[in-house]
Amino acid sequence: MSSPAEVCRNPGCDVATSGTCKLGNDPIESCPQYGADTTLEDSDLGPLPGSKSRPIPIVSSEAMHVDEIVAFMRQRKVMSVALISEQKAGKTTLLASIYERYCKGPFAGMSFAGSRTLVGFARRHHKALLSSGGSESEVTRTSRDDPAAFFHLCLKNRQQDLLNLVISDRSGETYGDARTDTDLISRLTELSIATRACVLLDGAKLASKESRPAYARQFKQMMHALNDNGALRHMTHVEVLATKFDVTHSRDDAVAQTEFLGAYEAQLVREFAERGLAISCYRICALPKKDVSVGFKGLEELLERWTTRPVLPSVEPSGIAAAERQLDRYLDRVEKAAT
Ligand SMILES: Nc1nc2c(ncn2[C@@H]2O[C@H](COP(=O)(O)OP(=O)(O)O)[C@@H](O)[C@H]2O)c(=O)[nH]1
Ligand SMILES: [Mg+2]
Image (tube, rainbow, N blue to C red; front, side, top):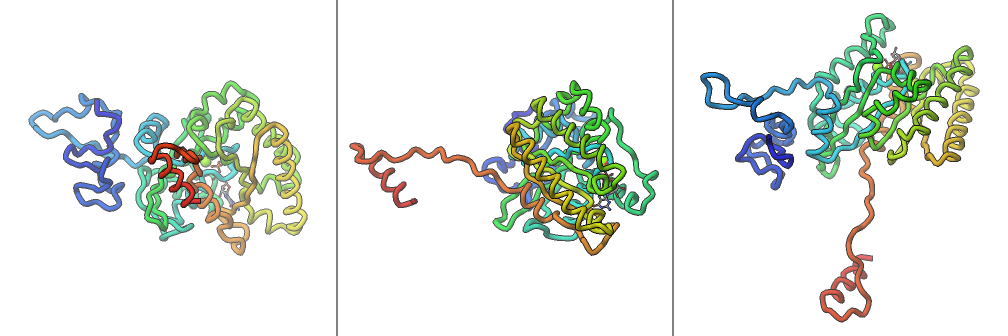
């Protein structure tokens, strides 16, 4: 089996230490040898009968499964976001919308630099377009038995740094069931590897007088079930994303709707703060089909949030004042000069 530190299948390439691709690929993500799946056994890669060379595995570019994503996360730093919601809140449409932004060029200060899941993105995008036409029957429905699917984007920021973003999507049915069947929560593996939870609040259901009372209650129940069972404890950020803002905005009573949404968000923040969970609330429109004047609201800020690197505490030794050793006096001077 390959060494876990190996990031390129080409034995003559020292990209792991130099950061430069031996074959001249820039960005390095575009090299088919780079980031090779090190979980493959050598026996899987043995020469074909009659051939001396090892076959090169073809990356399918479909959405990744949890074992693939865990192997990928061992190879490089990844920012991971779990999309959480019951059915039809807008998870897949949000994914498709992010993909579409980068098909058109730079967005949110970053440009597309590669993806392990381009075909997966393209499929979701295709479904989202079908769904936007109103023919929901044509949209493939996910089921409770479907595992979580992971989508990867490599983005280059203004400083030319590469950022790996991984977003998970899963059947809303599973999250709906987890509200009452809390044994399911420990099986939501995408939550244990994500550092950011993005819980989608269906703006259309909240805006409808018929569905609002039950939905507002069920949404909180789902959040409590996740929180009380420790699924959100390790997350650095938990955000509630109110979707379909075009629906909220396009109603005759848009002002009252927006006020209700604001009050509900404030209630969530208070209620969970009392239970030790900090929540931030945002609004989004990933597909402005009800009111095009709303546009693609909140997407740019969302990507900026999701790709902001956490500020890590300094681990540099602090200088010793009036130290006897010259080295310590030097460190003290350097520290003072830096502040
Ligand atoms: N008006 C409007 N509809 C949306 C928006 N986002 C998603 N939808 C619709 O909501 C439905 C469910 O969306 P989908 O992404 O499949 O939800 P999922 O089950 O959470 O993945 C689809 O018909 C989408 O077209 C939005 O921002 N505005
Ligand atoms: Mg979906």
